[in-house]
Length: 268
Length: 252
Ligand SMILES: Nc1ncnc2c1ncn2[C@@H]1O[C@H](COP(=O)(O)OP(=O)(O)OP(=O)(O)O)[C@@H](O)[C@H]1O
Ligand SMILES: [Mg+2]
Image (cartoon, rainbow over all chains, first blue to last red):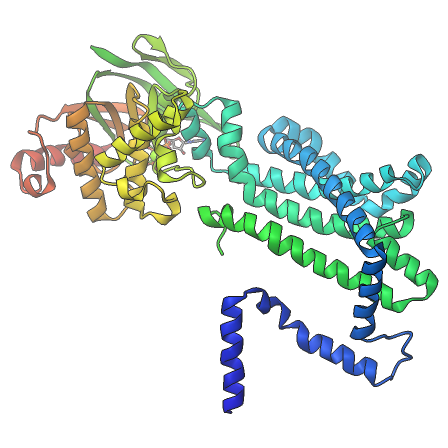
């Protein structure tokens, strides 16, 4: 029993000091299982490589500069698309959330276009814009836009009427109320929209890169398939997962902790 | 000096479910002088909130007029401060920022407005929680912030709609005593809505009894100040007045 207890106390101490350990530990058995299955050679090695081969290919691709380049391309595309989607989506969401007339006019249209999934646009986009950056950006902006608009509108409508009234009675103009009341009040929902938008956008990007791409993580994976390199495909998949984790825990979660959770608008 | 004048003020709602019109306030005329403390009391549904919301400019009147210093009221404005039953503090602003909000809108610099805000927080003993967010405060503390946030903007009239209805009984008494103290020190003009007869009499110079959207009676309250619950609970004059108002409300 004692060695187990010791191991446990060690674990507890480490996780307390380095919270990141918390999120790595659950993967240890998963990777171990993967290694065991790969080493046992149940499947042909070329079809089912082990963790070591993936790490080695990670090293080579980083060394050759391919992985950093592709990663940068993907991230820049996602960042640009998301920024555009958010810049369009928040004002549109505020408009729809505040004005019953705009809501009546735009809501059906929004729902209609939301139903046409991002990828469903690819055939026509390819005819219009070819295998270009425009096509890819369109898909990402499109994907990010809807969750941001719909959630922003929802957030705007969730701001209690009394808060509007309080601000107006303290002398604020309608425009001022938008900045001081509507936007901060809708922020938790806007974050949810952003989180969903980024998630969908990320997936849409990979899909677009697979179909349209000349670079990027999606392209890397598709190219690897052509070359029959399962190792690189696996590497691409792992990179996707790790990257999402980083975006979530380094960007999204801290914003949420500093805003909605701090203000008591969202229960932890 | 007449500060606030209501002339034949009426409000009719359309109830889409019943498909009929509901008259919530009917030809109410009232004059409130500078520095007066008026309570409006009445049973649930008698139109108290509707009346206050019209004065605040939150909803339009169906008939009659509201004059503040001879000027017609149109929409909400900073000369009519409001204290809400729901507190309505901005959750994303600290206590200090909440109280400094009115002065901020008026265009005061950060130093100026924070000085004002701290002064008002001192008035209700909350200087020590200035940097906290409202959700970290008790209900009683939150409503103290709500009161001084309205006061810090120097309104001509302070409108309060059952501001103490959602705090516990002990806190409510403390808040009532604090409000009478603040009123005595600064003499703001206050219209205070409540369904609590004791509260109405305790606070006001004049109690207006509302019934089915009409003013049933106005009663002067000449109880000496400062008022404290310890002294008044057993006070004969207070009991007589409360009894009289209670009877009016119950017959309403
Ligand atoms: N938005 C509305 N639409 C239709 N009818 C309304 C509306 N608001 C209030 N009423 C009706 O007007 C009447 C007066 O309501 P009001 O809220 O002013 O009463 P109150 O005196 O504040 O009651 P309470 O003590 O319960 O707060 C009620 O009959 C109510 O049903
Ligand atoms: Mg009411």
